[in-house]
Image (spheres, rainbow, N blue to C red):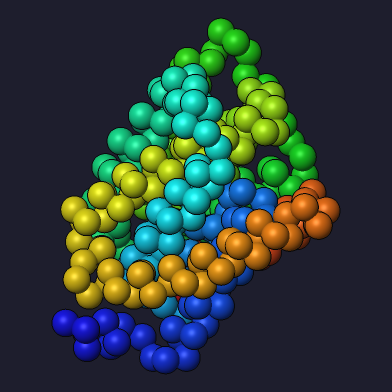
Length: 257
């Protein structure tokens, strides 16, 4: 069984994957999101889509656990009580959508990942802000959560829709980080469960995903250390530009093969 894990990719690809994961962990530690986007965009450049998705599962679970642990239980409980509708539909849709990953074509996968990555990254980069009136708060949680969870189940990333939604609610920065941690933490558990059921995470791919925990943790610690020493807004903009470039390449692959 272990030999099958080694056969998933050549050594150079594993080394490159560790580098991508290290960078993704650094981004996550520094700005609080985008780890799945960086990982899936980077890994999909030289790995099969399902292998890439399998690789990011355990690092995502651990990184989000570390993010949630930076807050108290009482703070996390309050965030869960306020955003329970959004969190519930995200988690449900992640599990449901994850079951379709193994049945879609590679080109469809690349488009499903690349198109929302480019659109959502451009929206954040140019500073477009949406406002959600109080009377639309409950319906919007179900609607945005449905879309966010569906994207998350297929591609492993539901961060950008969540960030845009919290901004549209005029959520204060500190509270945004808390809510993101709770949403990502519970969502990553759903992703783990969904791909156990789909078969993407199995006895062959789990050791590969576990091996990426080391660069993920190291990258996050570097990101935490650097977060107070960087211009967070500028770093976030650079990250979004990188994601736009990576997402555009994924769209190209989806259209041209």
